[in-house]
Structures are given as C-alpha cells and as structure tokens.
Image 1 (cartoon, rainbow, N blue to C red):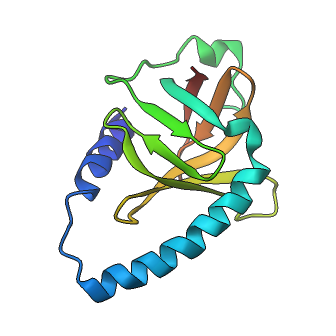
Image 2: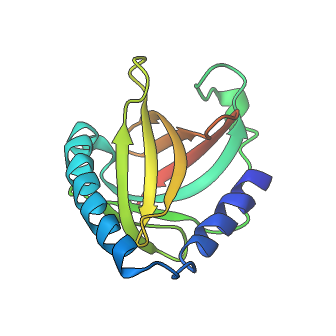
Image 3: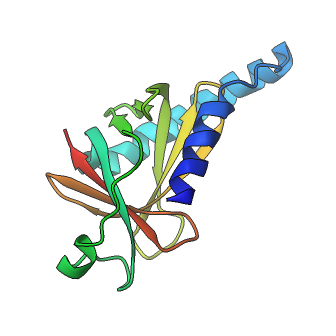
Length: 155
C-alpha cells in the first residue's frame, strides 16, 4: 500500500519540473520521436493490453507470479481510483489525474515477460512493472523489484 502512495506521489510531482532549456527540449523531442517509434513497435507485440484499465487492488505474491483463490481473498483495495488507457499507437493516459504521455512495453529479459514503462509529457520515466498476465477482463502487473502484484480490470 505504501508503494502505491509513493508511486502516486511521484506521478503527480514529475510533471512539475519545467526548468528545461530549449536545447534540452530539442534533444528530448528527438529522443521522444525515437522512443515513440519504439513504443509503436513494442505495442504491436502487446495488442491484448490495448484499452482502458482501472486499478482493482494489490496483493503480496506468494507463489511466483500467479493469483490463486486464497491470494485473491487478500486483495487490498487501493485508497484512490487509478486509471490507465493504453492506445494502439503507444500513447495513453495514466493515473486518476489522467496524465498525457506514452508507454513502452519491452522484454528486458529472455524469460518472455514484458515490462511496462510510462513516460509523461516531459519524458519523465515511470517504471510500472512486469506484465504477468493479460486476459479479456484483467491485467496483472508485478511491481518493480518487489513482491506486490497489481490487479487491473478492463473498463
């Protein structure tokens, strides 16, 4: 739960840093175009994740990236309403504040698991987590470096 609060704090405060110079902005624009192209390519690999999602809750994963019925009973509801919309072109909205930005789905390891990263308008990077499971109704994302598993429902 603390992790969710910290993530929300980071998301809300990242967009407030507007002290970039013109040179830095030009470099970011060039970099952003390359990343958007990569995002388009990677989003094509994750078509099943395209759509609107609402955070249902989180649990501590005890059996290696799966949610069983015993764990589902311990699902903790978030203290806020979280939202994410992932478009086919790699753009989207994230959090209750519906921050404009883009996302990338990458496969950093050879284990076949994909990692979701969100970039806000200022190109600030927000590591969301590893995509564990996507169905027509649910999306399970494991927090980076931890044992928390976030459950999202499709809207």
